[in-house]
Length: 464
Image (cartoon, rainbow, N blue to C red; front, side, top):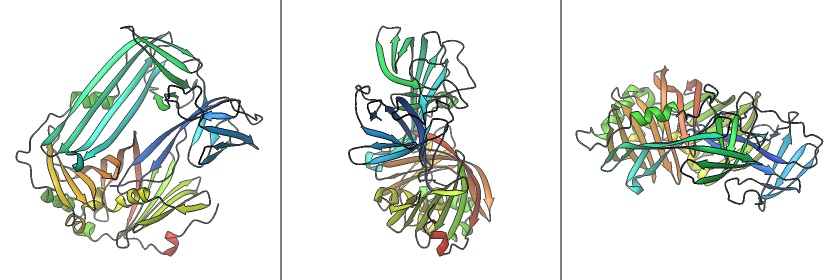
């Protein structure tokens, strides 16, 4: 039920030397940018940002290339505490903060180093929905994790896990696989050399911070976070709880025997989540939070309008709004057209989650396939509407527990919990969403049912 999609931001604390007086930068700066999708139907996107600045005025933001040490993505200048990055066809601007980090409206980058690796377990999780009827199967959920454990004395171990729960024609259930390795490591000027016990070696770009509340590292351009609850005292890799549970309880393949009618399942879920009151829903206002940001969403079902606002320090920093098949976006006082693919994704707020269970909408959807997920007392119903694909996962109490969608090349999967009644409509107040590469949590604070949304509610924010 929800979906926050808009440039938000996520900031992870780390300290570095003051660089106000510098004319040039030298080193790697990294952080994460979050894009919350509209509350009722989507999730959170995360984009890892890592930039290596050189004293000669060039930079590289593709650290997973074999030639990352010499590759040039563009040139930069530093003037009046502003860093201007110029690409071939675009540019971006950062402000140098008093702590030495680089900040813009969407994210903050922190200075990392590449000569020391503090002992710890560094983990990276990617998860998403995928597949679709066009491919003969719909992934209701897919998860992969990678962990690197360093003991601080030259020894490492790692673990890789992948698993999926799928639903599609003649396919139901899931699978999992895992792989571990260990050996010795060396780090020098950002080049990490892993030598495994079988003799083969791997080279990676690696930069990390030396402490702070949220410790992180950038490995081949991807941000890994340190598990602060388990400091590395030996060379044993500690798999994530999510991966461990998935590995131990991976569902087996099942057939289509005795699977209820998909439309009937969704209508029962409609009744549980509000029935007539859900069907009569015309407008909604939702508020929630992600990584310290306030997010407000407005939905006008009758006029096919969706608006998502992201607030920081009591001020709007970003807005995306759609009406029909067009839309606009606003950030830091600048308004521009919303790209067609973003319009399509924002509009999924009208077709997914609890809002997607409205009877008038279910009557329009084509039921493609219905599957039972083994050992989970849950059914998945795969639907199509206007060329897009949607999946609803309903438990044996007819509650909506997860959903997914595929719109164009964009896929999303979301797990729902903390169901609460709000003016006769039962909505989840917590959502674990996966889209693109990352899994994130969204907490909702309130929902107004059928509020009056006047012209001012849909206006462009006053310039900040």
